[in-house]
Image 1 (cartoon, rainbow, N blue to C red):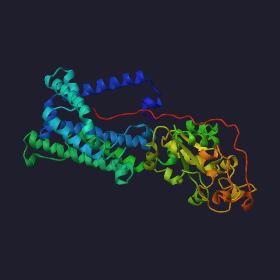
Image 2: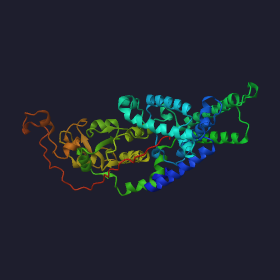
Image 3: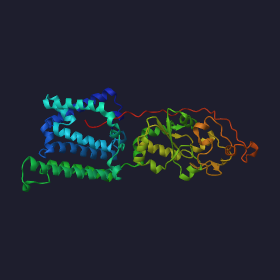
Image 4: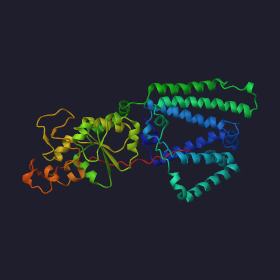
Length: 445
């Protein structure tokens, strides 16, 4: 079973609150026992005398990153369910500098001020009250600089995406950077805190436990880099036992009439992903659909752009029949994208429900290979004609191509003849069930 536990184990809200409270109390107790409730501990790092805060917090960040990366590569945790704070670059830099000055003056960060206040230390209580007042004033004045506050939004950005490298390679770099920082911190403490001279300073740790921790960190990073990021097949294998049932009972195959119905619904935003080759897409495609290759759907960064769409978005994958569209559905489902469905029968089925005008083409008249056109097209038409317009085809019968182009012509002038089928009246079962994205938040306290 993959984490986070609150989702995979379907904990109730009460259970989440209780577990969060217990974790918070435990974390606060550890901070107090480590001396972080003392303002002198935090301010000491700004004078390079006591680097405990940097070593502990940065060590936790590095170790957590490596462990999460390793767990993800082995399928022990689903990173699509882990909250990543969105990056607002310049507001983040400005806020970091302001908070850094506050830490230096007050001697606390928000978390350690709570720990200090809980033990009835006056400076911790004063800092906590001041932080509350600052938050209140920030809320009152936000409209004055809201433009800057929301600027340079890079979304849920990660280092592998920034440097265009694998997660394992980036974790090796982060581990090396962390170890180098720890060595410099040890030297700074010895020089400015203990007053040792240059001859007594050393970069390498003395204790066996320190060497063991370094070895475990490097080993975990190396294993993660060697294992590599999970492939689309790996991701699908993790959810196949449960998600495969949706394919077996065909509960994710939406009838073309339902697709057309949702396209007309202003309360739902539909995105149709056409995974056929580009030449086939140009031959005929549904209006406003997007030509996307299967390889593109294996790109985590691209799937993130889809996941960032509004919460009322429904995605449909389509191919000539269902084979390629089903593979596309698997890749999107494995990446955790919600509300993904397959157009039942693909484009070939679409033409059965919404017959195109005779000037576009004609049925092949013989069995066709899987995921190939069952229709003989006279030319590449793209999304011309009503049959390509789901919201129009649902309520209007397809019209003759010639009469569409020459408005003053009569039916007798049409070289293609007149094609006046009845509008689609076939019954169908609604399959789409819009699942709202769960509100997930996170961050540092």
